[in-house]
Length: 242
Ligand SMILES: [Zn+2]
Image (cartoon, rainbow, N blue to C red):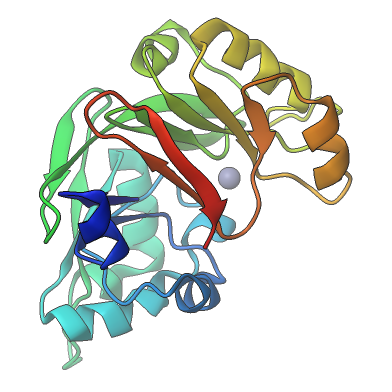
């Protein structure tokens, strides 16, 4: 997620960049998107496909010369610290500095990441994702829930007023820890964002088929999809491929 003072500044790369999750293909994704700096990280949860590219932030930390602040719920914090302790603290006997400063963020609390484009304010909210403690992320007009199969009233409140909601839709059949297409569409019809984007699409969903059958205002995501929103009112300015 990027924030910039103007569209020109955004195009010139003068933006604050918040990375949400460190997927295993993080290096390739950053290279193909031309991202050369990041200012902070948020984790939705500790599953391997969300977190195990965590070492790829090292190059960004070298460049900025300082640790990255990383926001996550306290359960995700415990899980990531148990698996990747060296990311957050120098182990005894090691000379390598840590890469991130972790912050446990409770649901509804707000945190901010500062950078060249100004502050990005974010909050996390609890979502159901099978048995895994998992958060959705709300940043002004944007909400992101990549892995979710249940939303309680508090989560729906956290999502209300969203202009762009990027939401899990794994497949057509129901799944024990992910939303299926009709469940995601049902939630979208309640929240009514200007644009709903279905993500986490599995191999049994076809992009073109989805594009044809999804209702107006909902579309499937693809790698490299770039969406530009006006920070003032969340109006959709542009939707394109990076
Ligand atoms: Zn997951």
